[in-house]
Amino acid sequence: MNILVDWKNRLKKGHMLSVICVLLIIVGVLVFILYSKQKEYRQASENSYNQAFFEVVDYVQNVEVYLAKSLISMSPEHGAETLTNVWREANLAQSYLSMLPIESNELENTEKFLNQVSEYSYSLSRKNIYNESLSEEDLNNLKELHGYSVELENTLNQLSADLNEGRFSWGELTKKGTVAFAKQVDNISKESFSNLEENFHEYSGLIYDGAYSEHLIGIEKKGLTGEDVEEEKAKEIVEEFIGKDNIQEIESLGYIENATIPSYDFSVKNNNSETINISISKKGGHIISMNSNRDVTVEAISQEEANEKGKQFLEQKGFTNMKETYFLKQEGIVTINYAYVQDDVVMYADLIKVKVALDNGEVLGIETTGYLNNHTTRDLSNIKITKDEAREKINKNLEIKSEGMAMIPTEWQTEILCYEFKGKVENREFLVYINAENGREEDILIITDTPNGTLAM
Image (cartoon, rainbow, N blue to C red; front, side):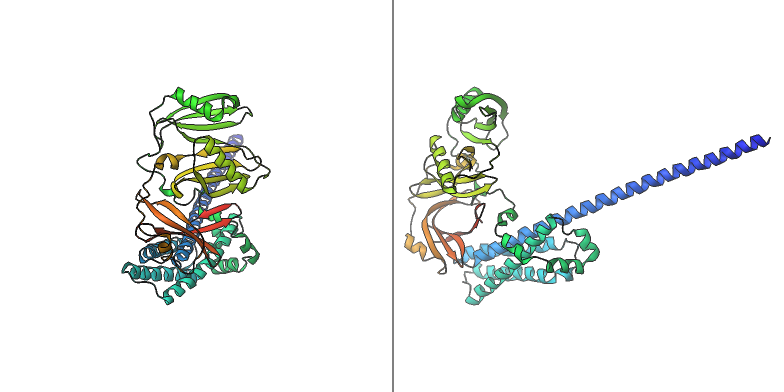
């Protein structure tokens, strides 16, 4: 009897231990799930804050660019457009700034500045719309605001670098608030500002295609001439373009019907066992793109030599009268933009990009989408004002370095024949475009030279 009671007690104890173990396991699983969910939430919040911050960086940069343009704009029409852009970009910067986990009083000066820029640029744009010229006081105020925008941009760029390198996180700012943010700003190294110009292109969020590249894709493919070709014919074009003697094998990747330009795509292995991807348009059998990649560890040729290599390559492939415009250099390879020239007028929409290796000048790629979309013979007879008359429309502070003519595309898929003036104001380069028919100031671009390329914004 005692033995039976003893077994019952043992069973009860064993059952209790089992229940406790199960409960502990359940609690452990719940804690793990809760921890994982909190970690996921923190990461999602961090990603959201990062996105908002980098949007602020981009919009503040845009504010600085448009303010700089407004300082040399001479026509009320273009001035109104530029100042409206300042107003819009400053408002967007404020919106994203408000999403950051920092109390508003900690960023009071930044918010106050963006608000001032927004309101003031809006009021001046209204002035321009009513065909009133900006006063000397207006221009001085804009110049002062531009100076502040440069300082703010530098600060945000440094914070961006610190964020990318993990020197602070939004979680820390959320916990520590004002003290952490103030400490972060105070700890910005003045020496690091010298690197900002070199890294300026990295903050523009682009793989640079050059000025006016956003207007390259038209509904009518003016340069896409000729009859449709079959895949076998497209393969022959590939062999001719690359050279039969330099080909080990060609693999067809099929017909891409839904592309901007319907194409036959091929993968080619050359004699060096390098892979080359190439696209041929169905209509006319034109080269749309060719691209190969290899490591370039030594830069043995200059930018001028690379420009000439690219131009020679284009002439060999039947693309004549091309002029280099902008370029971007990355990892020993330079991508050069060439625009077609008709009667000494640069056609910016007729764009071809060429990749040149800087070790031996080999052409590693070509992209002709802009050229195929837009290339045609233009009517250049509608010139109503002289170059001297156009020059009179330019801000007197612009120290002119070169003059020419260009056809620039618009966002409405049209083109405008302009006089193009390149010059400097206070060591900053600008391109100013004056309508050759009516003398209107059509556009202003800022040129930024970096160690890795020339950008126009």
